[in-house]
Image 1 (cartoon, rainbow, N blue to C red):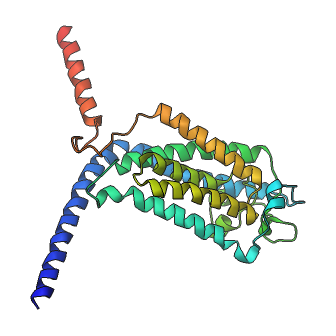
Image 2: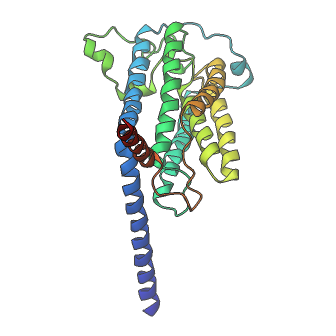
Image 3: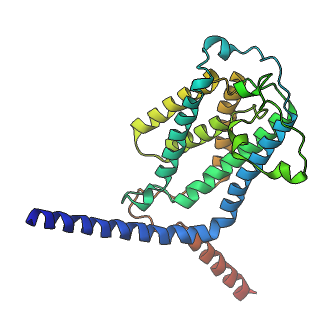
Length: 285
């Protein structure tokens, strides 16, 4: 009985500590979010724009002979009945990264602000997706995926009956889209997440594992015939170049691993310093 009471007290005490961490971090992140919400909302809205663009190219897709591809020659098909393997693997990468970005709410050691991290991630994603839209609308290639080949009912879409149909994204279109090939959206997300963790993560083993998973994801996409090899190759160097470009344009996030760092980033302090400078100029005039 005493053991059960002690264990209960311990659980309650740790739960209170955890709640305090979450509440404190929420207050800090909320203040940053109120300053950056427009940029975050724009990044999220562009995900819809990207989806509409991918839906629109499906109307223009024309199935045809599969192009000769070196990756297809080297990697055997895993078959339509196992096409879900690459999606499950991607889902593991996707949701693992999302969970990791919220670790400052739980753990005592913190290296970044979640809001600022997502602002950076969305800026990179939007840039890559904008380039992707321009690319796959420039040249229409016959899709290599099983549902995009001749004879499949999903290979083409009937002309839209209403203009509104162009802006509606259904679940079937997400899994059975055709035409949005160069370059791979799955690899954009994978590489952005891996590069972000490589820069801001702390576990060396996970960093190496993340790169290995990115390579495996590339091979699975080709083996599933969801993309041509060129779609994956272009994604690798384009995403890395975009990340490099964004890193040079966006101010670096404050490192929170140093205990001497303030709870809030220097945004508020910068505003105060600017207002002080303005007052000084007015006084001088």
